[in-house]
Amino acid sequence: MTAHVRVPASSSNLGAGFDCIGVAVDRWLVASVTPTAGTGISIRRGGRLTAVSVAFAEDLLARGFRAACAVAGAPATGAAIDATSDIPVGCGLGSSAAAIVAGVLLADAVLEVNLSRQQVVEIAAAIEGHPDNVATAVHGGAVLSVRTSSGLVSTPLSVARGLELLLAVPPFPSDTKAARAVLPKTLPHTDAVLAASRAAALVQGLATGDGALLGAALDDVLHVPFRRGRIPGYDAVVAAAQKTGAYGATLSGAGSAILAIAPRERSSAVGAAMIAAWRTAGVEAELIRSTHPVPGATVTRIAQVIQPVSSELS
Image (cartoon, rainbow, N blue to C red; front, side, top):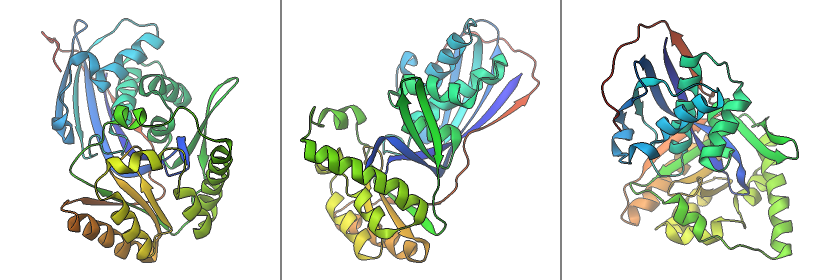
């Protein structure tokens, strides 16, 4: 059995939805796997993945694959994986989550375990450390993930027609671990109340397209104030988006990409203004436009004869 998977990019947080809300973005990681004799895994990378250079033990495709094998109670099977992606790496567009989810789904298909979508989310979230990107990559659309007393719950969110996401992506990454390190361990109670109200505004604003609610929601107090200084040109790009008609703009994930939400009729002007603002700051950024809904991960299974493989590569 060989398998092919297609997994979308994602933008998480959307301002006030820190670590719990994400939306799928129209960029994709595509991967295939062919079972091989033995237990070795070979990975051939293409597209944006050629920028990835990690030790085999840290490769997220392989980690997702082996984690799914472990959950299935199956010994790690040998596999030859081919993967290519047009998702910018390390820029806050869920490239890591897409790789983990792809690995889990490839193993599930090869082993014919038939994991539920929520099981895939839970396996991937355990590796990623938080569920927002992985849940969105699995389910597509916009997704809220909440940890409850009985476990992780992921549920789709409504997004009003006529909204468009504009993502201005600079040619430099943002280190997620470093971005988390700058966050304070505590916040004043008044800030927590404000954060809760803006998270609620995000859910309602997405559902209704209410510009005032979205503007408040994208003006986050939990993480953006502490991370924005790490992104050169952040203030200018956000101001340019707002001036040309965006409801608001914020970091995509932990950055370095900047996300704006705008009415579709203003989206071309907003995107152009964001790119121009970054160009003024000496940065040639890439613009990604994404309309809702973008579907979640898909899997295709095809019968295949097992071929031998001799070594484990990264």
